[in-house]
Image (cartoon, rainbow, N blue to C red):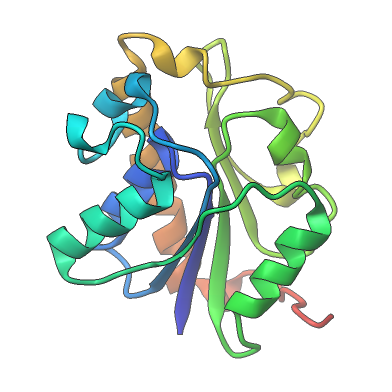
Length: 190
C-alpha cells in the first residue's frame, strides 16, 4: 500500500493533498495541531471563510471527503519531540508499505524534529528570499533553512509561489512512487 504522511497542512501541505489525491493511489495521513488562520484562506484549496478557525486536519479531511468521498487519517496535535514523530510514523506504516513523509511545517523549530529520523523525508517550503525548496532529508541543511516562512506566506504573490512549489513537489513524489526500485534501499527496521 502507498502511504503519504504529511506533517503541516497549511498552505503547502493542504495543496499537496489536493494535488496528490488524483495523482497517486495512496492512503493519506495528515498531522497538524493548528487552526486555519484568516491570512491562509486565499492560499488553501478550499478558499472559503467557513473554514476560518477550523482545525487544519479537520478542514483537509472535510474538503477531501466532499471532493473525492475519501478520507485521510488525521492527528490534531502539536508534536514536540522526534520520538513522538517516530512513534507516530511507525504506527502508520507496515514493513511492506511504500511510503513517504512530507514535512511542510512553516517554521524551523518544527522542521528540526525530523533531523535525526531515518525515513524517506521530503522537506518542502519557501525561503524568505522566495527560493522554493523541495529537498530529500539527506540533502537538507537544517541550519541554512532556519527561518519562519509564515511571514512570507502573507504576501500577495504567495499563491503563485505555493502553486509552483506544489507542482514541482507532486512531480518528485510521483517519481518516487513509480521509480521506487531505483532508489537506495530505505531501512525501516526499528
